[in-house]
Length: 319
Ligand SMILES: NC(=O)c1ccc[n+]([C@@H]2O[C@H](COP(=O)([O-])OP(=O)(O)OC[C@H]3O[C@@H](n4cnc5c(N)ncnc54)[C@H](OP(=O)(O)O)[C@@H]3O)[C@@H](O)[C@H]2O)c1
Image 1 (cartoon, rainbow, N blue to C red):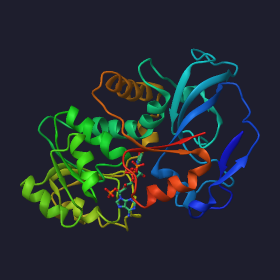
Image 2: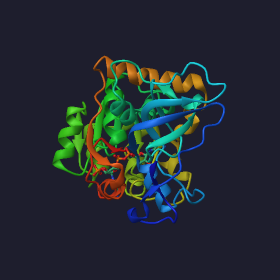
Image 3: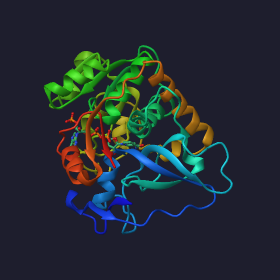
């Protein structure tokens, strides 16, 4: 099979299209022909070595495709089924073996492309709005990078829960998309904290910040007393060490640095989040915006575009 292999960490050019042996199927695992692989910002951190992995590795942690073989001890998944997964490495490839415990059978009414585009960023948006901070009707919510992969889904799901969403974006085109997703107010990053104060007098109930270094301080000062700062990513770079005293002086705030793995740690939680997402997509309540599809061999271009902020919503690699 062909796969993208990273043998040394670095820029997008280290993503090398390579001829590899097919992965080996072990008990409890399923072999899948990949139809589409999702690109996520975490793939950039892995490629750069910011989140270190042992080399060489096949990047990518999300895909959907067709089951071609099932290992011993696997129940409830048959050859020919369309399945999808998130948070299992090795998806920038034509084929992958995935533990059955992490697989989701894609329901009728949801295509493989949509499933590959939905799960990782969608389950992130789900846990942020349902578990990290349970968004309630009437809450003021600040979503950074509101036209990004997580951002568009987070905006829609926060709206489903009855919030007023304020989104930040960098361009006019992204503003349009964020508004289509339901954002009530869309602002630029420059002076965003002051703009938030004008829109939501005492500040917002929660900030969902996946941008990191560039927005952290302004996010803290956008919160109302006892508000929640959910720092879930660092697209602009890592946040420097923080003095906990800033949480007191800005209103007894809460700061959390959540990550998906801890919110899908049990099969029940995984099934709950994925089930809600598939249901919303099938019923038309949640739109998945796929802005770019690249051939697998062009993973370099996909990463260049993602890092240069040229993409919106989801980008896919097609083997
Ligand atoms: N903790 C978790 O469980 C979890 C799970 C999934 C994703 N994440 C995090 O969520 C964030 C978004 O991920 P994603 O895959 O959906 O990516 P994305 O939002 O589609 O892409 C990143 C966006 O961040 C914004 N951005 C602001 N400053 C940037 C900079 N200096 N460089 C690059 N982008 C910048 C850009 O939007 P504008 O041009 O509008 O600013 C850009 O489009 C990432 O930090 C990712 O690591 C965390």
